[in-house]
Length: 345
Image (spheres, rainbow, N blue to C red):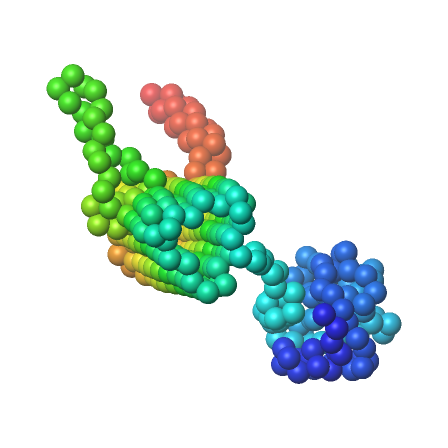
């Protein structure tokens, strides 16, 4: 990457303050940047690095003072968005496998599209279909009749169980399991748990990304579905027959129980937990470590265990912190009342 500051400013819709002919060749964090790098400043917490950064240029929002004269700036409304645009355009990692590694096991009945790359020790079973420009990295196992779309990236050590379906532009990070059996058991007359066969599948629509060590259970019947644009962080459990709506994001260590339906454009923070068979409204925000025990029917912010309106829960939490002081106050009032009663008697 080499680009003049003037061209960079035009690219992100910013204004140059300083040398428009300056060439930048890399992007770096403000505290780590070196000469020739461009960095960015959009959070007040990082303003302290502006006076010491060795970057040649800074993407900066209008509210920050441009105190240094020995570096150049691109003033832009949202530096965070601008830097992401730079990364996607100029520094997007390229993960390319050329052809099929000799150690891979590809069933003759599998269909592989143009420019598919298959890494070392990959297993592709009978009846599978993989679209063009998809890369399947080392030690991944794809079982029978799996369908994978175009331009997908499957990192090492992924397991995709039979009959699951992935759309286009899907990214799956290492050690994730798609289509493991749902947690389905029925106690018999002896109190022993008997396994209920899980005969459904998992469907990931276009532009879904799964982090590492994600577990998505196949449906008991029908499909567990992650709709278009869903983003799942590491270490998330999604149980059988769950449906997650378009462009919803789920952070690490969240758990969603069976047959729960999450709306579109929701944000679920880390370690949130959901009971089964409930529905969550579109555009809901669920705070970290929340326990969602019933359906949420209105968009909003929710927090706590059990989860409730965030503003109400914060007020309740503040009141709980005041309980020791209130207990002491009540104790003193009781002593005062007792003293008054003695005087009256």
